[in-house]
Length: 352
View 1 (spheres, rainbow, N blue to C red):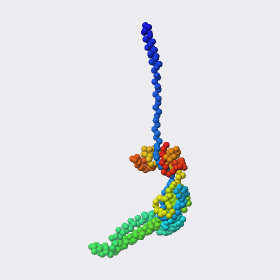
View 2 (cartoon, helix red, strand yellow; view 1 turned 45 degrees about the vertical axis):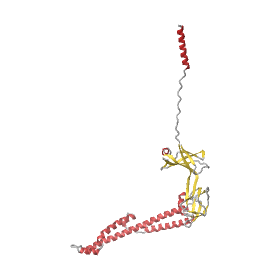
View 3 (cartoon, rainbow, N blue to C red; view 1 turned 180 degrees about the vertical axis):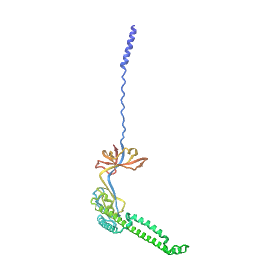
View 4 (spheres, rainbow, N blue to C red; view 1 turned 135 degrees about the vertical axis):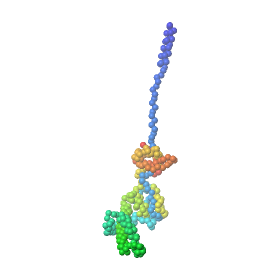
């Protein structure tokens, strides 16, 4: 009996020991969610927001160069001047434009006077000059066709007299006379219509010439030297190269005494007051997630520790191919700048 009790105590002790040595099951640790970085990154080039390449509109020897590369210019500054017989300075172009404008006004005056004093036939009421010409030409063609059988009157009368039942010569002559009068009237109406059309065309041409003369005159008299008038001014005052807007000369390929040919760019002017970055490697998958006005961060390779803010200015509608990918051009307008920025620097763009 004692042995049985002893065994029971041992089993109980072992059970308690097993229970005391067992460890509680730990709770499961949650796995953190990994959020994918959806930032769109592209590479681009830094450019001034506004720049232009100027070419000569006449060929000749370079007589004067007033600026050098790196110089700042104001709108209208003469950068260089040519010695060319067929070219003219701004002053000579202005004088010629004034004379051309005066002549154009005189032509309009004379053309208007002639048209106003033209007696428009009542048959043309409700018609324009071109409609009158078309209508009178149709009437003329009919009158010519009606008169055709009576054209050679005496020969036809002789032929009629050989018939078994010849037509009465008097009736034949009277009928021919009627158709001939209708033909003459049709010709007179047609000539009147053509004359009216010529006078109207002369007035329209004179007015067109006046518009062009006024445009040239205004462009040459523009004291602000705005970009809107720069093209006309450059083509007329072809002995001079003038800055179309304020900026910095970034390229100047003109030397005094050397011959310069027209047509080839010789001067580049850039407005460095504001900058853009142009990217050309935004794929078709990424471009659908970029919108105009969207914020962007630009980092230049030359300034890796400087982040510049900007916004998407434009997205091209056309595409190009780059190593089998369809890519689009995107322009970012920077809202910040740095004195160390230079045209052509490589930039990384992050679209937020």
